[in-house]
Structure formats: C-alpha cells, structure tokens
Length: 329
Picture: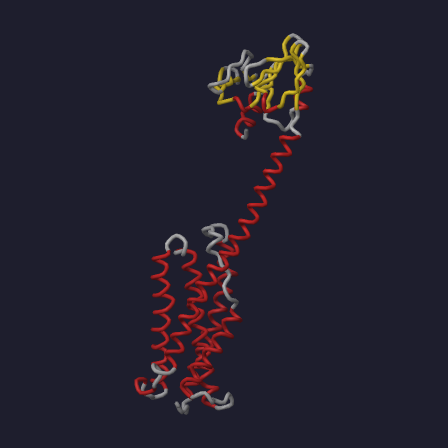
C-alpha cells in the first residue's frame, strides 16, 4: 500500500479531474462555435454509422466501478471506503478510468464515420485493436509510472502489473466489445424498423395501384353500333377534326368519341396526356422525344412500334408547357 505524504500527489489528482472537465468544456465550445460555420458544409453521414452510444453519465458510473475493482485488487477485498488511501486512490483512478473509456468512446465514433464495419471490417478490426485496446493500455501504464515516480515508489516492485493492470485490461476489452455489440444491435433494430416501414410502404403502393386500376377513368368509344369502355392506359391519343372526335388506341384501332377537346382536358386532368395543338391530345406513354422546328415549334417523335395518322406538330403556344411536362413525364 502506498503512503501518501506529498501534496504533489493531490495536485496530480486535481489535474486529472481538470482534464476531464476541460474535455467536456472544449467539446461544448467546439459544437457551439464551429458547427455554426460548418453545419452546411460538413460531409453527410450515413445513417448506419451515426450511432448514439452510452451517455457520459453511464460512462462515469462504469469508470467508478472499474476504479473500485482495481483498488480492491491491490488492497484486498476488505477495503473500507472511509480509509484515506482508498479515497485518494479512487480520486486518482476514477478520472483515469473515465478518460480511458472516453478515449475508446471517441475512437469508436470517429471509426464509425470513416472506417465502417460494413464496408471495411478487416481494416476496422485492426484499427479497433490498435486505437481501442493497445493505445489506452500503453497510456495507462505510462500514467501510472509517472504516478509512482511522483510518489517516490518503485513501479516494478509495486505489483501493479500483477494486480491492478489485469482489471484495467479486462475493462478495456469489455468496453470495446460493448461498443461493437452496441453498434450492431442498434443497426439491427434500425434496419428492422426501416424494413418494416418499407414493407408497409410497398403494400400501400400495391394497394394504391390496385385501387387506381380499379377506379381508372374510362372513355366511351363508338364504332357503328358498338359502344366500348376504353381505359386511359389503352389510349394513344385523341383527335378532333371537322367537329368529330376520334380516339386512337395503342393496338391501332380507331373509334369515335362524343367529347370536345376541352371536355377531354378536364377529364384527363392529372393523367399523362397533353394537348399539343388545336386538334390533338396525345399520351406521353407513346412519346420517345421531340425535334425542334422553326417558330418555337416541335415535332413529336413516337416510339418505334407506334404509328398514328394525326398531326404531331406542337404549336408555338403549347411548346413551353409541353417541354416542362415531358421532362417530368
């Protein structure tokens, strides 16, 4: 057991706690100041890498338990919390344990962003072992050696590597495993939630498509004494010529309709049809593109398997609207 007689050791404890509070203070200042300038320019993060790990208050409790266990290993199992040496060592080991856990915490946050488990699991595992295990253990040993030197004690004869260090080692491994398990658990439940929402969305789309097909408007077409109900998905275009209305189907058939073009425009509102000139309303489903001609006009280019005997000229007054609708069709 180390006998404490120097005020310098208490200063070391104070410095450790000051480092803890400084880290939190600097983090809040960084978030408050720099996020205002870089909020719009920061690289967007993948949702799978943005994991909320344990809250800092939980990390403090875990570090307190680990500090107590490491002290108990060196003093025996019957240590009294009221003893002076215990209170001093807990004041020293607690912030050290917390800083180690905090280091592992921030390493995982950064690695989750730049070296993900999903895309680079081999490289991530290597960095996890180096930054999450080896580095904190080395830093721990260096800090403890400084502590023993300040106390004028022999580190090699102290028994630290046989008593306290195994606890620290298992703590570091436990925190790393906890963070890795936490990452995959969060992503599992997140993916499950997204999949459930996606399934519901797909089902709603299917229901909507079925309802749309069920309630799809139809046009009454006539050919002699025959009267047919023609669905909009069967129609290539409408034409009005000499006060007579015609409907051209995708299969090449032609029927009469009793609608004027303005009545058809009202009926076809929200459907993929557009009136390109004074006599023709055409379906975008048969349009492959268009060719610009003189006087701000255009000539509609039909798909290869479509043949229509109607005017395919887009008038100058309808050209701008046709272009905009074609882009979003």
